[in-house]
Image (tube, rainbow, N blue to C red):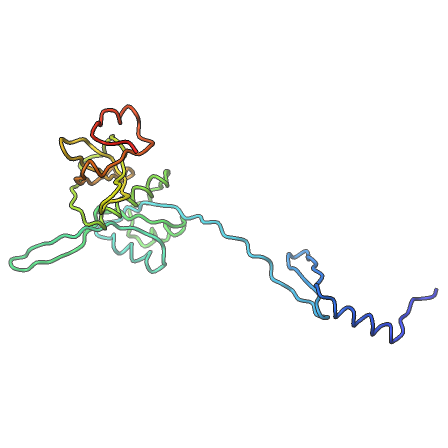
Length: 231
């Protein structure tokens, strides 16, 4: 059987045309790697990385006594998002004045992480329990408003219980953007910021003119609060 052959001139011409090919010819291998031929060389490109899915969630960590800041240091070293609301306190010992920062909610630390990070903190033997958060959006909104209020350095009181009132938002002033619940007063309203999962809250005085009712406020409740304008 006669075989097709190339003379030297024909082979040289074929090789030159292959090198001059401007576009590489991609081929996909079974391993997921992509190869291309360009200029007589085979180039192997790594597979396209798969985007990681964010599995972090908010957890409430109940700590042992006076272990809140130590637990926060654990997360800080690992660059894991966490929150420990602190309030300034001044103590007098005779003529000495000592300023310190104490947890607003003693015994609790909020952390946004993967579950295994919360378990890692539990293995430090500084936690009592890990409390799962089923309504992530609600807790995040509560913590956001609480953080803004504390940064505004407004005077507040601890509220003895959670309240069912009108959800409002502060539209201007140092507390702008803070959301909470109001209980009606004669001339001024008291804005209650609560963390429902803890069953704890703080409250502060806010001028009624600075408040607007949120759109999702129950109409039956809104109607009895005549001094507040709807958004």
